[in-house]
Length: 399
Image 1 (cartoon, rainbow, N blue to C red):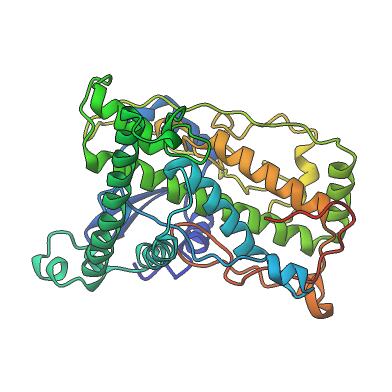
Image 2 (image 1 turned 135 degrees about the horizontal axis):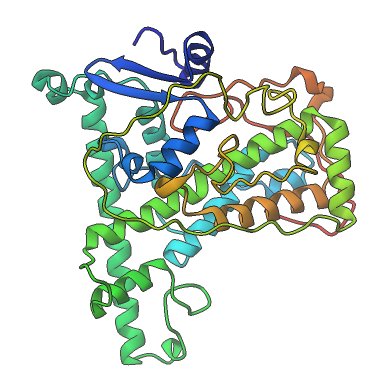
């Protein structure tokens, strides 16, 4: 355990370079297998996919697991010419999009959900000794992190229970046609269509699925969608904007392409099939003779530098087929939100680069930007990305 620092992904990378791309780490009582090889990833996630499709048993990532980050609107800041916190603006936009998809509208408890999400990500991504000594009754009973997570879970249940009750009341009005305003509506979203909660409630009532849907299942699904759809896409866009602002040549090239309409729609991907997996299976993975990975020099030239041009003539896909580049994972545990994420990320980045000319505030130089990561379940940037007043060359655009 002493080999794992606060930024575990850096420590694991260094260990893989020193020892082997497949390692067994003893974290307290928990055996952890670390794979840092594209070849081994292909063998484990494709050839032996069902064996590695299970989930870790942790209260921090049991559904519901993550909530929205704290958001701040940026319209007034942009209008006044003040520096804009791009990270907060992107999070605000993505939370609204995901809220409307999952709940039909932006939740009135948004601020509470944001605080729970931030606290949860910090605790789940931090060190908790109880996760490594599962057989110790004393350690697990008096774990302050677990107690805090259970308290947060209770607050979350109260919010989601009220959300479901509100949807049920509205659907009852729609079915009865008791109010003129309800006629012609099918669901709870702003346009009268069904949102995710409506669909799940309908499936629960009709019993169309082969298994029953409980209220806890509905809360878990909408919670997962709400959190994952906001935090991961926002983090990816924050990194993209930070790297672009560190590289004036690249951002100028991208803006020229966007404004000329030369970008292409790359929305691709499909939901992987899921099935019940065995608790454990014996499988032998061959001993590798070379180190590989998503940032291995054998596969990528200057893998740690930001060179998006490398993908212009590259035939590699990012949907789990090429195992030296796995932004969405692979196999049965592959991210099911590829289509939603790509649509969100591409559209927002294109709008930001099309409408505005971004510059660092107060004459800051690109090489002075801090690109250190935060410890946690996702590698977000430690510092917020702030840009000076945009030069509006085109129509006004608000997030």
